[in-house]
Image 1 (cartoon, rainbow, N blue to C red):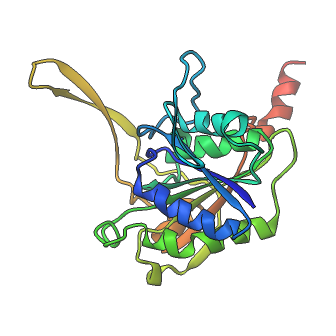
Image 2: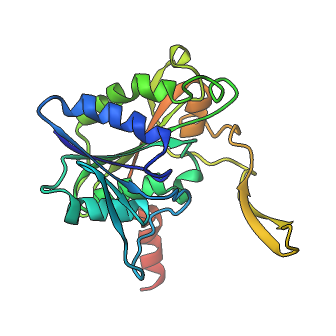
Length: 260
C-alpha cells in the first residue's frame, strides 16, 4: 500500500511521528509511506489553500517533504508533484487535541482529508483528545498509537467511501484516556457543544499595542448521545463519515417549491 501522511501541527510535531509509525505498519514491507507536512504549524486553517501565494518545498529526507503552506496544500503538493504515483490512502494527523463537534469545521487536519476525498483518494483524519487523564502521560498519544492501526483497518474493511463527485472521508478521535482505559470504537455523527464557541480575547503587549487572540471554551462539554464528543468522553474512539457536499438536501425540495 502507498500511503501519504500529513497534519496541521507541522512536520516536527510528535503526533506526526505516531502517524508515521501507524502508516508504516499498515503499508507493510512492500509498501511506501510519504510524508508531506507543513513547515510550520497550521492549526485552525480548515480547508484553506495557498491560491494567491506560491509555496516553497523542502526535501528533508527521502519521501519526507515540508511545504510552506496549509495541510490541503500539502495534499495537493504530494499528489501533484512530490509523489511519483498517487497514494492509495491519505492519513492526516495524529492531531494534538480533538477535532470533534465544531472543531471539525476549523481543523486543518480535516481539511487535508477533505482535499484527498475531492481527488477520489481514500482519506482519514485522526486526532488525539487530551484531558487530565492522559495529557501528562509519558506518551499522551498512547491511545492513538495503540489503537490507530486497527481503527484504520476497520474503516478500510467496511469499504464505504460514498459516490463521486463528493466521496466520503473519515474523522477519527481517540478518547482522552490511557490506552488500557479505552472501551472500544463507536461509529457516530458529528456533535455540537452547546455554549462552547471560539471567541476573541484582547490583550495589550509590552509595546503598548493591542492584540486579539482567538481562544475557545471547555473541550470537555459533552455532545448528545450518538455523537463524537459524547463517545470520546465515555472513553470510546469515535469514527464519523463525512463529505464535502455542504448542501442541506432535507431543505432543498421545500426551497425549490418556494421559488417555483
